[in-house]
Length: 362
Image 1 (cartoon, rainbow, N blue to C red):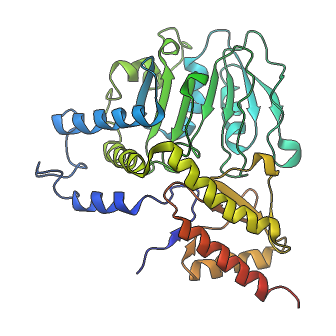
Image 2: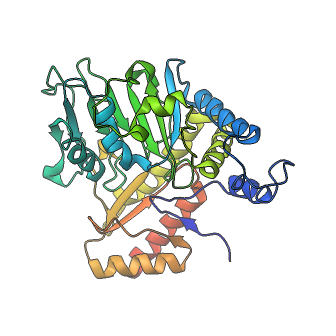
């Protein structure tokens, strides 16, 4: 069977070149006689894999030397707890709630600290990013938290909040490596890799070193202490070794494509094709305010649940899979991450045009 165009929000499409390389190395990684799945994470071979992956990521993102890179387990959800625990000083933090994942992070933080919502777009079903230029941030807040790209609702912070001197913590799971980023504007960036970087099971943390401390919230589990993981170079326990290996291959693939500037250009071109069609259609409708649209996740609706279900079914029959919207919002959603080729979006738009013609009264 031919490979489909996979619009899943995550786990998501990976570069075919990466999958073929991994296939070739499955039984014997570079002459060592075993698979990466089988080797010790303490051995020289894997040590080379993880160090090279970190080196390539640092080059791609221009990560300063005073930031630590960690490859951990637990996904982004685990950091919903780890962030307030590790950054605990005054026991207070400001949260900007622009979707499901920021809301969950806020709810989890509220179990350990005084988490304050300083802005929210819940009033319009998270279809926009609120003005964050002059927020009422508590002076004693330990940090300001955002989810930078909203996978479910399709919004993106194109301008970072004014944190008024507080450290910014950003969940970048669904926009990771999609464009250049100034790491110095953040105290902490982190993301589950299963959307744009690799297979499920790895979370990558980029943390300014002064924020990696011993004096964390006393109840913080050993495994959730960033210092535990940083002191052990991500090898405190057995890491998600195969996932890290695939991430490393994706880093090299992105470098070969021209780096993050080239990724941004490609992604903007794909998104423009889809958004231009949505804006011109009287049948399909985008759900996000134009200025806040994500170039990674594009939600859209028809307004008729039966037709939407039919659209998803027929699209899948035509090799366009995973277009059903998140269960909390319905409709459709096309996730067009780095590895989605332009031809995939062309095929989607062509199918949407055909579907619209067939279901529009003449």
